[in-house]
Length: 315
Image (cartoon, rainbow, N blue to C red):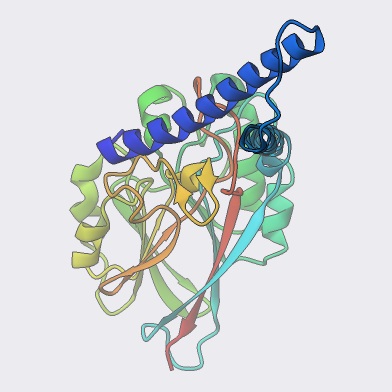
């Protein structure tokens, strides 16, 4: 975690702990008052302080409940239009669907309804940018979801940091018909338009140039990688669209401020959404699931996301 992220998280959780510590003290004082052991100050400032602390505590409990029971089970669809002169004038729009960070556990959350939601968008291609499972018990859930997606449209995938760090011995995509890209590119025509899709797994960054080498500069190009961290290098290669995930939009974000943590070397610079760097459009998807391990399975102000990207002619 970068120093700035560590500081933000420390400040935030220190404030939360302080509020509930004050609330606990006030509850103890109130109980002592009820039993006639101690007096409870009725000074106006003390009354207002108690009201503020208890209000903040109640709001916090409601937010925790929402983040645990509600938001992780919602899906937000984000629609993006990218104009390119590499699509001939009058060419049919091409629809891409981008998802990331399923982080499947043994019990499905959104994996069962996700294929139908994406099918309703009528995509020409589907991209998944890594972090498949939190535990081996989630493998079947993940594979069933990915296999269903592959029946909707050709589905291209890359491995994220969880996939390569913890599950390198598992064939995550076996039996799904998804197409894994790792240091190579796929060339295809969609509705008469040439597309080139390159991708690399986390840990295989040395193969980036090899993956991009065969892509002609005058045809539309797409790069799949789990982190947004290669944006400077990819922009130098004049790639048209870079799809990434990893940040979860912070997973726990604050209204009007956004992510506290992104675990990206760029911090909040590319925390979620669409960015333009030179000629490259970067989309950072908030992901579907939640961080594994000991991390809390909550989302707040960072709703699970399906991104629908329409490629259209510039003229």
